[in-house]
Length: 125
Length: 117
Image 1 (cartoon, rainbow over the protein chains, first blue to last red):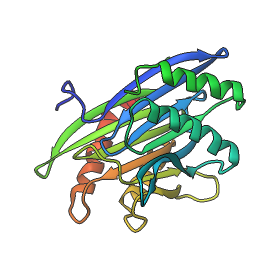
Image 2 (cartoon, rainbow over the protein chains, first blue to last red):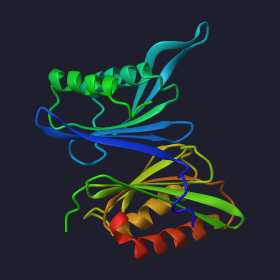
Image 3 (spheres, helix red, strand yellow):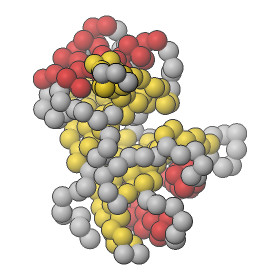
């Protein structure tokens, strides 16, 4: 039943090569949250929750609030999540994001290219 | 037999007890993300995987109400059945028989379309 109708959860996915490593990007709209997966292992990797920081006086701020749900809770994870979160919010996403991230190469160069890809891709809007 | 596409998404819906329940499955390498709900929301998330240390799969709640163990139990059952790491998001109201029907329906889908799991 309803296999051919439009699913309630819309998913967009794209694969590309970054520094010769095949990278999969998935963006699913879960209504109150977005699920974004950026993976070079084909797996979930580290799972991070990203939200907009809320200021009692000014309402929503530009800062992102990060919580590691699963995986390495280390500074680098926060750096990646913050950069990726900011660029996703820059693409017009307004709701909290669940980010699954699994990169083979955790260098600043890789992060730069991932962020670049997000800003150019059309799957995040 | 390896699938050419590593990430595969599968959606289906079923009317159970007057509720249209939607299923969203994302197959990843050696792992799965299964979302179950009647409207678009993601309020709970659990992950379970088999370990060599115990016969029951290890499980943890990642998101949502810790006291609601429906996601946890379902994640453990599926992790054991599929021998994979299972992320389960169960977003249906508690307190009725829906969860057992959901489980039955999911098992039926696994048997009918094993390549999606």
